[in-house]
Length: 430
Image (cartoon, rainbow, N blue to C red; front, side, top):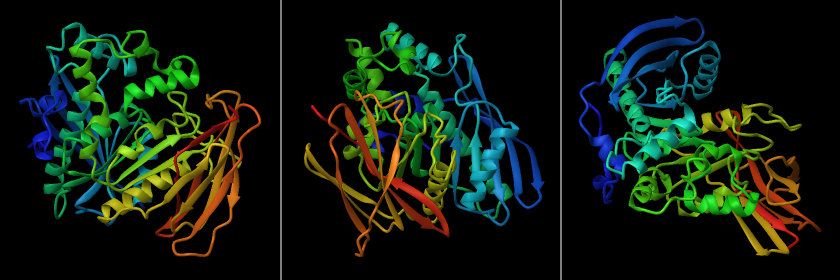
């Protein structure tokens, strides 16, 4: 049965998202397609799922459960929600994550089902937003993020029912992750289902959305071309009226922030073209509970690191995601990595502390506050002998243009390295 944990359970009023999640839908069903044994890996369970009927369309999904050898019966597992269909490439990535986790990993595909209305991805989300507003906000089921979140909840229902039969005990708790609009889905699902014990949203650095748009205009001089599906439909800046306000109240994760009491790992790229380099600063302080961030240097929206420093490619992001998942599955969290920027704009210092075996300072320069094409460089930071280890470094203000900084710590879990970051600080000559 679909677990419903609405705003009432969190002591808050219900939103459009809550109303959609609680709406009755008898089309949910699933079946087991196959279970395969993979030598030296474990088992791969393939389920087919109908999560719901949305706007008269039955949403169907592939749901893969990767079970590394010896991990059956894990009460807490990680779930990745993603688009597309299972293929050799994405299954290899999922196997790599499961191997690093040393725990089961579920991968839910076709989030969202598409194309619909002849559109896909952000174009489809923007279409549903526009239809909601044009209809005066009367059809609260329209915004596409709502069925995306409900699909994840139905996927968890299916995993729990299947593992109740296939394992000594069923999976009942989840570490949820996803990238971009699936990261958006991760935030929203984490706000409405208490089976989720930790979240790791990737490349969705846009909470507190209305402030983000204003900040983007000040930093870039114009909206990012990556959000043109929304700007062309005049969805940002927010139109006047009750329907637009109700829409954003339902889809902006920042407005659910008091619900995010569980551990959080935010993964972003330093050169992601969708948002500003310091977008995190507009919502970080408002997030409650244990929280961590990794900003992958010289990486864009795919977290593919292009750096002379090792590790290369997506290894840094996968290592930190896996360490976070392992901790959450153990019922723990990653160690605290603390930082503070102090002093005046002309004499700023970055202080860092935490059980890191290495600390670094990453920095980049740009003629304006647009760092999307900037090259990031690193500088080793001397660690003081203390408990916990700490360091402090002075940040130089450029003679012209701007310089952006952030710190990074290298940590170890189960003998494997992972990385955590600080927020970004932008300093300018003006």
